[in-house]
Length: 271
Ligand code: IPE
Ligand code: MG
Image (cartoon, rainbow, N blue to C red; front, side, top):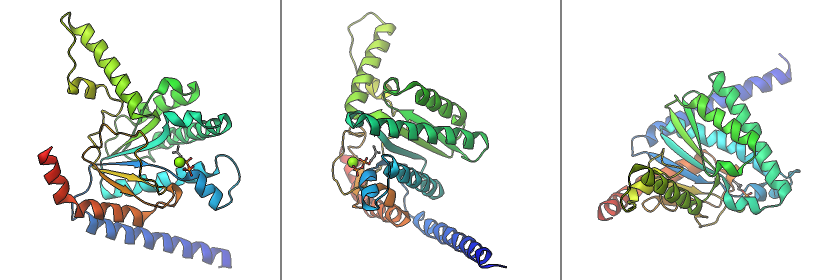
């Protein structure tokens, strides 16, 4: 056996041990309540690229995608049924055209990869839903996103809502418009909208309201993300940049959620 084989074997043993340790930690974590829905404001990709002197406009976002796969895997192993990620805000269209193109191209690459993975059974139970103004993104990405939703629609293990070209203001305007149209089609009396009519037409209606909202990158804003749905959610912010978010941050955030249970439940009853 040469040195390279030995290093390879050592790496495999190390990965297996880490996996075992993770499962053990998750077992303990699952003794307490687990959030039904976690949403993520992924922030800090470009700062990560700068910090590590990575070259290329999409370098930070590429690192961010690696984090997405790990975090989704952790959520799946913990047994969280719904995850929402803020992948591209309506405001992000105001970034430099070149960066927007890079981000869209990268998203297309990852969506296409996910379609292949779904077809070969690698996504194992993950259902992907895209939420946002899909008409404002380019056609290849829109078509691929549609295809990914189609090929994963019967999966029930973990539902991942990917918010693209999303902002709550746009979502509300879209939902109000849509519910007006539905009501107009249904009758000829005066048009009265209920909150439930609007809620039914939201982009993110597939998932229940988030229990836990995690924002990376050290900022404490909601950035127009699910502000309608998060009035009762626990907000957890961390200084870690999105590509740095790892196992311990997740465990810490869920422990905080568990510690705050009494408060959150009392608050829900009062509302
Ligand atoms: C988040 O990171 C990327 C998106 C999900 C849109 P940024 O691109 O905002 O990176 P920073 O905050 O400028 O470092
Ligand atoms: Mg940012």
